[in-house]
Length: 425
Ligand code: GDP
Ligand code: IMO
Ligand code: MG
Image 1 (cartoon, rainbow, N blue to C red):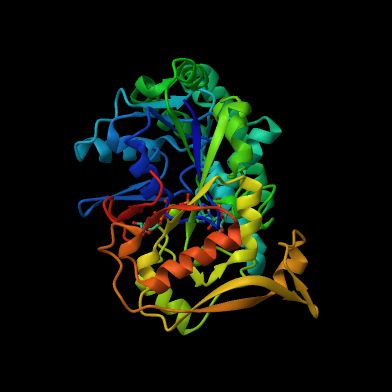
Image 2 (spheres, rainbow, N blue to C red):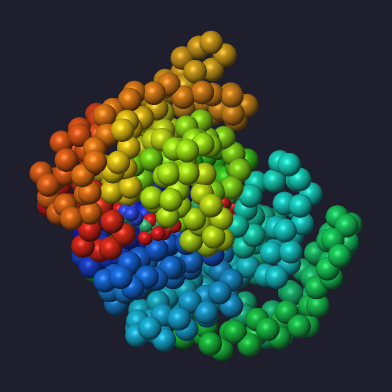
């Protein structure tokens, strides 16, 4: 059976949660491989809404859901999500497995996230404040604490003591007012340990056994290609490989078994936090997209920056991801615009660029060159077949297909499960 990756092709919030939930009905296993509670994946079922930050979006189907070794896990957040799911009748125990190798997000990571953002002032990244960068930094410098260590109380308390002693010095040197209490942190985390224990396992072995047994594994990306720490718009990115390049390392799945990639693409562009965004519409168009699309962060509630589809960035993303197909979301949001624009090139310093510039200084100074397509007025939320869509909407989708050279296999026309058009099944 194939391993299918479902990955965002833009700056996150493309609607990955909805798509994963839809296709999870066909999956045996859903695995997240990177990121942490910076993600906010929304699933709507019959008007009921779930927002997952750490738990994979396949949990509603009672499939095996894995928090992979490449993730950074905030135990209190995870327990809150487990509690919320259970309270709403979603079976979690027996369906959720947390890698013993995943790294813990500690209170000092969140403190350092806040402090470093504050120190950046006008050049702040606009992080989610969930401690993601500092947690991955500790992983790289080998002072991170992994989930497995929670189950050795003395060892854990000693690791926390050593880390807190160091972080308190850093915080003080950076002018931060707060000083953390190692004993209180160790107590809190060891208190979580007993509740987490039933979920923790060797997920690498679990996944490889599932593959060997012919199970269908879906990989759920968080963030998006353009937020990837290596290939995104660095430094305005997250701290993990949120593209397909992180899948093997963050899950233990063999790279050569990753055989299908579905890129989730919103039919316009949004971005939360700072960083270059050539097609951003700061005025009325942006406001209209934000209102019609409900573009407010699922994790932080921040208004998302909005603009037209950036075909240059998108071509770069789908090529790097090697997307086999595109799931195009939020098509209903474009109803009522007289004209819909698609950026097909950038203008920079008197030159036309057709390729995405990887130089951040160049990228920041790029201006969009647009194709303008006629809009449509019909509501599309009731469409269930491609032919139900207004002609101009179909032309817009055809335009995206030819721009990207990939088929749009799924079209989403509303947040709910059934507001979906499957084109090639
Ligand atoms: P994710 O991070 O990629 O999972 O996306 P988010 O959940 O952060 O943001 C997507 C938002 O759009 C959520 O509120 C979804 O319920 C909503 N959504 C998803 N698909 C559609 C769609 O086709 N139309 C509309 N109007 N909303 C959608
Ligand atoms: P999902 O999975 C959109 C952005 C933050 C910030 C940058 C770094 O819901 O698509 P971090 O807290 O990761 O250090 O912040 O990345 N960011 C996201 N933007 N969707 C997300 O997740 C994001 N996760 C992080 O806004 O610009
Ligand atoms: Mg989101």
